[in-house]
Image (cartoon, rainbow, N blue to C red; front, side):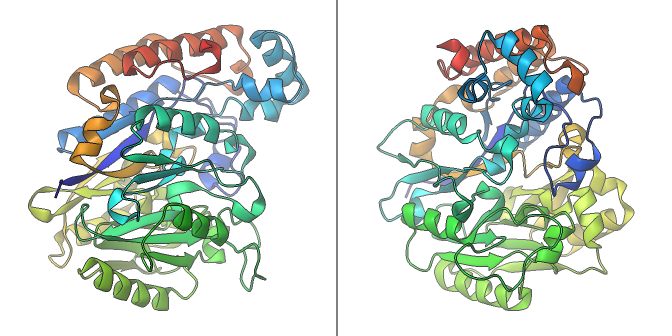
Length: 450
């Protein structure tokens, strides 16, 4: 059997990375609205995190920024003229619309798609469904570019099956892998797919949030499981606790994180959490032939407010030597005494496989509501599947150095919302992305290249 690896594909922030405060229900984004951003720092921080994972012996991939401002949408909405003319008109007439078209939210590739490995699909293909992200306007037009990039990287039909985004309606609102976790004994063995949703469209809701919207639907998750041809009973569903959503838990990866047969979650994560966990353990034991190790976090251990502000659960859990695991956590977790003490206890506990915790500085991403786990899309791949993908998107020391030099050359140190329509910024962004497609050997993926 071909060995499998969990490959992390991280998104790069774009040159227009800003704090537009566009994500309602995302407390960090709302609190950072209108602050000065640091695009160069954002990109370098993301690259440093990718390099860390590479240095830890993991296979690390890169997904390029989307083009911003996104002129294809603005033209579709009736704006005419050159790019610069459209930018001036749109920003004057509809400032929030234009800011949305400049958002760098594509960097959080946990929302880019949901992926099923070939091990779990009846047709033995890796399946991709780009998330439609219709719950938030500034993300609702990401899927087209996401799909184009994924098809470019994972091009061989012998191994990969690409689906269109789900129907763009509230019934099938899809937020991608931020609400999906695959549990397994090893990456090349059968897995249980844990889908988390905020609401049901076609069933009256008994519980729903009162303050912030529930973004992801049960119907979207079921549709993905069906189209990806998941084996029977390999899918498992749970509903987010509406009170957690109102506390700023807009995705499951803000309140839980899992890796292989380990699951770390807050006690307030789900409706009927005790029953959910018991049933999930049984499913993992039956299908994966391994005991699911759970680490429940009580309100007494870590208050939900602290979990949200530090993004404790938006840490990455990744493989380490000797079948152990390690955590990549935001530096905010280290700076919060309660969370730091909790992580120290986890690391010292011999009953779980966590043996190291690495704290990383991702402050530019964190201020917009994205920690280490938000920045990566997990794609379990067999060795032959890895060999078939576009090689220049896999991080090496040489590629890392080239990308750092590229960022230093093209990204601004500082950016304000008022500067988003700057003709020079538009030119800088398009020049940077055009050069990047050459570095990554992706061909023409942006509208301005055609």
